[in-house]
Amino acid sequence: MAATAIDPAALEAAMDEAYAAGAAVCGEGQVATYIPELAKIDPTKFALAAITLDGFRTSRGDAECAFTLQSVSKVFSLACVMRARDLDIFKTMSVEPSGDAFFSIVKLEEERGRPRNPYINAGAIMVSAALPGEDFASKVRHFRGFLAEASDRPPDGFPVDEAVFRSEAQHGWRNQALANIMRHHGSLDDPDLAAMVYFRQCATLASTRELARLGLFLANGGTDPLTSVAVLPPAHNHRIVALMTTCGMYDEVGHHAIEVGLPTKSAVSGAMLAIVPGRMAIAAYGPALGKKGNSVAGMRALAVLSQRLGLSIFG
Ligand code: DON
Image (tube, rainbow, N blue to C red; front, side):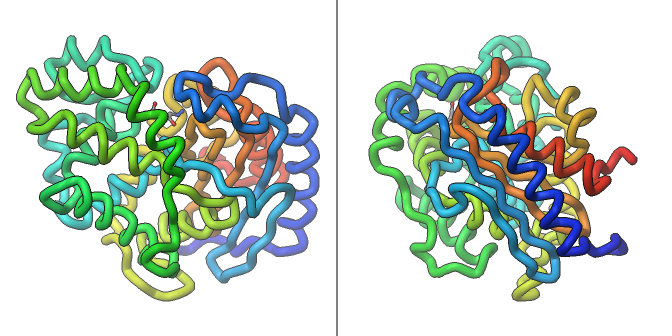
């Protein structure tokens, strides 16, 4: 990929400004409460981390603090499924933004069990069901193995937050409803299995630094630039990153495109992963969320970083 390398000194200066800007709004917004265990998270945590394609790493704040990946995991489950099954998943799922909240049921019913895209909950549950493996344990093992391979960590490198997993499994009524609607329309076989695999994947733990490292292959056409492992073929990587641009921030994707201009995936835990194609991966963590369910501090910090370094893919 022919993109100008990021100058470390310029990156450090922009990181200082971005961190300060995020920290200034850190705590604005609310932590998610619909998964009761997430309501216990300290809303004042804040971290920013970046890693360039040539391996330069920098971070600020609580960058070692682990959080659950939640919806950021959807990018990696899609990558894992596309690697195993090519484009099959798109026979039963579209690639268009929904314009609705990530948990919405309305369009799924109107569109007869065909999810709009893989990053809203309905689509992600369908993707989880398609993970390689016959049962819960093997699907989860495959997913975790994929994360480890993609970021050069040991196979058990990404543990699971058992309390968050149980909490979502006990309170995930909407997600179970989405899975059952898809079962009704024949686009999913086993709604209980799909929902449980999805909850488990969402409860995967990583720190901001680890998340930036995990996203690095996405910034390099599907190949980890530090190990040269081809995680995904370039065309699959392109699709995954393109979908982050159009669907990764749910119904705040337009605002984010203007302010930040980078393919990004957010999560209700406050995690964010942004990709600068050909240049670097950036992760942010700030658990207090705005009205659309995205991290207030994370979005602010990414906006400053992108604007200072001229990173927007829209020029
Ligand atoms: O399914 C859920 O509701 C959560 N496990 C993940 C949702 C999520 O992170 C969406 N983010 N904005």
